[in-house]
Image 1 (cartoon, helix red, strand yellow):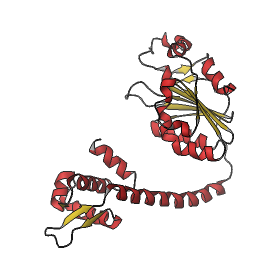
Image 2 (tube, helix red, strand yellow; image 1 turned 45 degrees about the vertical axis):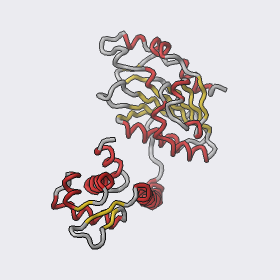
Image 3 (cartoon, helix red, strand yellow; image 1 turned 60 degrees about the vertical axis):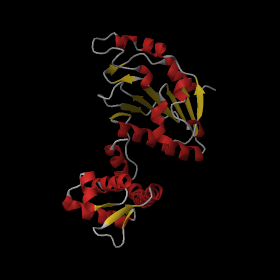
Image 4 (cartoon, one colour; image 1 turned 30 degrees about the vertical axis):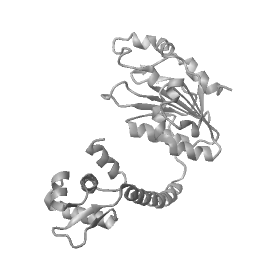
Length: 276
């Protein structure tokens, strides 16, 4: 795991970028002086003492008494991250209570019939919101359900409300997210890649698109209570952004470049018939 990844994860727990860099360096180096920490982390010398002071106030590092020059020790990783996580949860609980009150004062707003979002975080948030609004069932069809690993919390809350959650996938796909069957029922029943490609043959024959550019098995279709459908389209490479289409009715499959007249009937049937 790179420093940038670790720093990014630590900032999501409430640390500033410099604080994350300093704690990362201390964990890696062990007891160290401010000068050594600044050199290792890349924090400017003019900022390092301020940064270490903030980390000390957070309780995840401490000064070594009587040391000259002053040395710093990191708190054990598990204790430090648990502490930061609890702080984030506490802040989220407080903010949730206040913001829900403000939201309830807004009244009911008109909702779009259909809309699209782009980017992984927007896609995940759209799926999470739909699941959190579910009252009866959530049915998902995908040959690549790895995206669902980001939705464990929403699945857990929905399951506790008595919402029926089912994933229809391939045997290989169901193993991509270990433990997913704790939250939902996994049914091994999905069309093959060849069948999906055949369903999209008119699109693949178009000059602007080929099977190398678009991978139909990297789709995810979700139906919530029969009133909202979501189609998620994951690109085959990192140069493109994932995107999702939300429709407040039975899902008609759309592709980013054009409307497709033919519905992938096998996938749609799996969702609509609930495989019961």
